[in-house]
Image 1: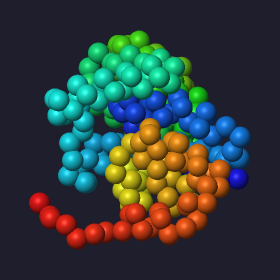
Image 2: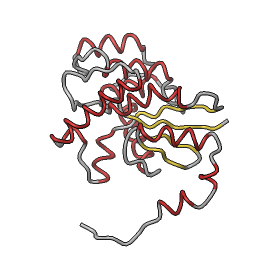
Image 3: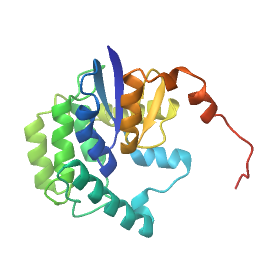
Image 4: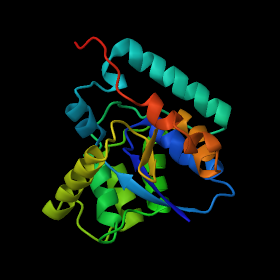
Length: 212
């Protein structure tokens, strides 16, 4: 049985779509998925990038593409009333739900994803957050220093493994980034011979080029 890590931040619409699509991508494959909620902004800071919603033309395209992909995949989606937003309250809630040494379960992650991406409301509305917290009944205090540190530590772990964006699925030390990588992930897990040859390493090898 393969062990997969699904690195995500609920702020990302692509992470939401990939989360919803993942069971279909893994049909018939023996595996276990561990869900790893991390701070996308921490990845952006480390790698010197802006989020797609922070660049206006890219923001408009991103949400048009997301709407199309949701339509094509048959996944319900409504953009939250404010985006981008600060996802820390949601990340800390997920970490507070997790038992020591393990991540949140799929149902807990689903509740948070649907909180953000269904209904079109403000993800950080106080009453909605309170209702979500009551529903999830976290084992730990989300605002505790231990939980805050847990979010930081897991984000640092992701960076150490080379994660640069969300969603990313990690398996056997290989990283599959983005919603559109799920087909590639399925091929790998299904034993596609391409992954056994030199193509993976050769395609990712550094090459000389202009540095800005």
